[in-house]
Image (cartoon, rainbow, N blue to C red):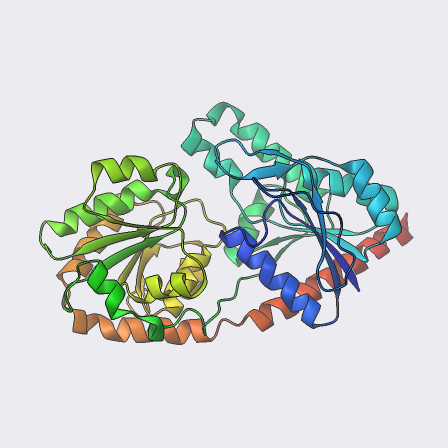
Length: 387
């Protein structure tokens, strides 16, 4: 089997979509698939010719700056290049992971060559628009997303909840492809006392942690507000922000007492997770939220909204804490209540969080992806036969 994966982002870039796609590609390759990653050239990356080795085949195409995301770039349609490439190396199926011009170009070429196309829905761009004052074009963004995905044999959402939402919005042939977590990497065993000392934390003090893009669409301001409220009664508490983004500079100037760890990867990131105590995740724009399962796997007390990964994996007050979706007052109140609890009372929650993560296997997710690709191929063949 041959898969061409078309995406705007892929490792070594650091974000949830890139990480997920990297895991899926590695999993398929380990199962004998020939895979080609088609992506735009990122900032400061030198041009590379197509690599035709089976285990690292890559097609890097021209790119343009991605508005609102400094340092990231999006692909151009590149239809002539894709047409030439896929006539030479014909995929069994093309999977469009992101909805930019490159993905649209890939769908056009796939139709020309008679190759089935599947897709995943990773990012709520139509929700992001409200955070960047794009309300007037919000409907156009939604229509564009629906057109792109409905041109594919299926659209895979990360949760049953999101699949139902998309179905109700006119997306056709929706399905579910969840997310796994690396429980060996993200583990309570990674807790680092030296790192906590660097943060100025005593053994009895509590670290409130945020991991993710430091940006408006992640609702980072609510995490800040919640922490400032609880700090009035918990003077020794520390707030650690792991990640980078456009809001970071402003936060550093207003709240120099916070700890800004910047971008972290691999074992370094895992140590930052495990060295925290309570994970604050106030985002309301997620399709899934990989950081939630990473925090659970690290044995943290997770405070988040009742949707996406939170709804899928957290049982309120059993292995984490949930509040109604986009209810800021409830989120702040929850963080205050957590601040009033003794550390010992949270230990059962942390143990249950870890136990939950141990049941979320990447092997199972890759198996599900393989099954979804086979179904998309079958559906495409049936339609072609009917016509």
